[in-house]
Length: 202
Image 1 (cartoon, rainbow, N blue to C red):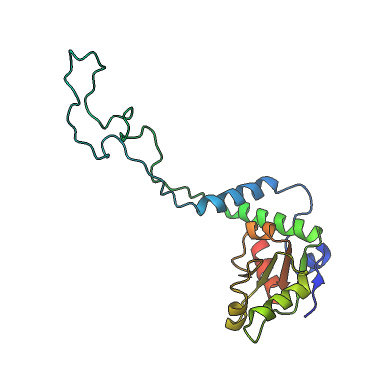
Image 2 (image 1 turned 30 degrees about the vertical axis):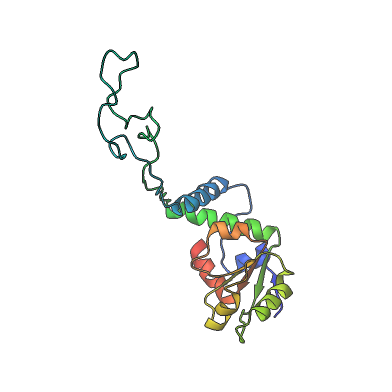
């Protein structure tokens, strides 16, 4: 299983849209920001003075004690009281136009191809399903670097072999994200993945 460095010319021949100049940096930033925001659960929550567990009784009488008046022990200035303007459950989801997402993908691919970090192979599979075999196959292609392997699909044995390898990830070409393309040191594309990426970048 030998890999071949993908060039800009070869990518264009495969009808993969790439951005070679400075265009697309803002789209790239917005897309990565949106991907990270969409992973947030937005579950952070604090209780207001109406929600904390408190007796509701007036701590002391209104006048005559010499102390500041107090109406209850749920006040934010009291220990154990409610929180003012604290975080509440919310949706962080960001939606981007398809054109922005496509431009970001073209920019990310173009940059990695220009840096000679993208390899192509006819296919990628580990027939025995062993992690050791998977690591050896990846090392032969990417020399032990963090590796993203993109294909049109992988058999079950290959998935089993690679599921516990921290520095390698198998991804379907239709689902690979800009963030993944930027994170990994080496990207391996199978020939059938080129056709899918060509449609996504068209």
